Image (tube, rainbow over all chains, first blue to last red):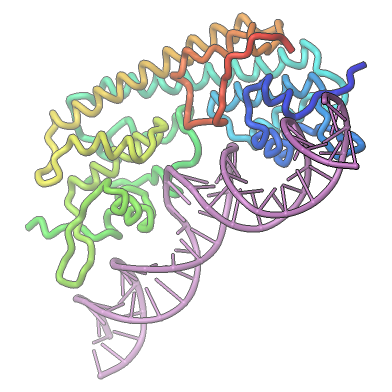
Length: 150
Length: 150
DNA sequence: GCTTGACCTCAACCTTACTTGATATCGGAC
DNA sequence: GTCCGATATCAAGTAAGGTTGAGGTCAAGC
């Protein structure tokens, strides 16, 4: 049977808007087939792919990154438990490194509270070495390494 | 003396692009004066304001949120150590709550690795209750509470 | 007195992650 | 046979956070 799933069904199951799913197809995150009438036909595995997208987005990943991760999964066959476990492990590491980054930042901040300097050279908060907490790009020329005071 | 600082100077000191600083002015994050010729005149305190913006952005805050935080600071006088300490304390709490959220997420993920279910109803990762890790809005209809399996 | 660099404004463009609207077609119910 | 809901495409719009370019001005150096 596996007759395939309609976009509306997938939308209801994932909580995504139909338009979002179509957009994700454009972005290469899912590749549904088509029936004779031209309508998208999804497999159950696609729901998992989309679920993965949702989770990864919560973690702050850009769609491009998510696509890269998903490219490791088989498009043809349904992913196995081991496939997902591998992806989840990658997530775990990412989460760990974010926690580490934030912890570092917090410790520095503790040192800074009361200091109030926020000096570009002296303040530990500006140290560009811990990127773990960075999200997106921010200003283009972020964190230049100046050496005089202000 | 305090003759005021040019936008170029401030740009070099903060590492921001001149265009970014002008944009931040538009957004109300800084309010430089003008000289007779119409050029922006910044104070040293403005560098701190902008530094604050940079740090807050690293933490994933939107400019609107940052403006709100900065509105607590005096625009006229230079901020005191206590002013900054207050802001930093707010940061610390935000960082703490993010760490908590990520830790929760990691624990759940640990339970999920190997399970591979990613089921919308069963998988703990979908629990919408811990928003700490959320950044931006994500898909509009994120995390609907469906009750059947897939 | 003229050039040059830094500055000004304003409008347009960029990317990401979508939504919205117009217009058209498919296919099952009646 | 017709109607309706779900689907399709394509273009345009939205929001955030900026950058880029055109065209013009200011002030210091030679």
